[in-house]
Length: 139
Image (cartoon, rainbow, N blue to C red; front, top):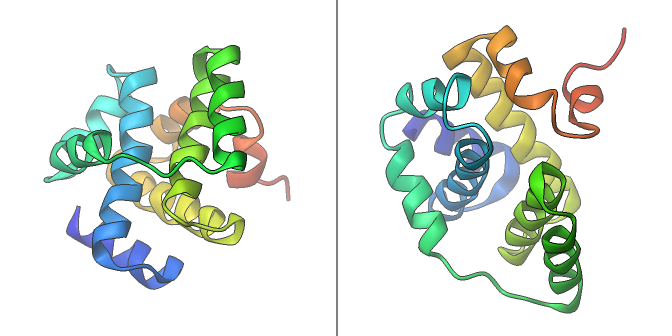
């Protein structure tokens, strides 16, 4: 987990505590939507990940108008699509910009690929609308 936090800190330009919380939110999203298989392997392969997930879950997030709309729409949609909007609302509530969210996502997935491999990472990411094209652009 420390290596991932360092990567996020450098790439996203946030403090280590914020990097850990952001990673905890993302990893928590994966465990919520797929606790068995690759998500479980990813968390198990990262010492300190469960603690980061617990800390993120316990952290209240700021609800501005935009974040309230994202979270509200996410609640209406339900399932993975709704959960990704709620995750986005939590991360933007931490003060992360769209550019920072992209860098955060890339760093987490680069690290996850090192931990569980590309094929297992694809199992995690393919069900998320639009994410596959972002991570695996056609050449």
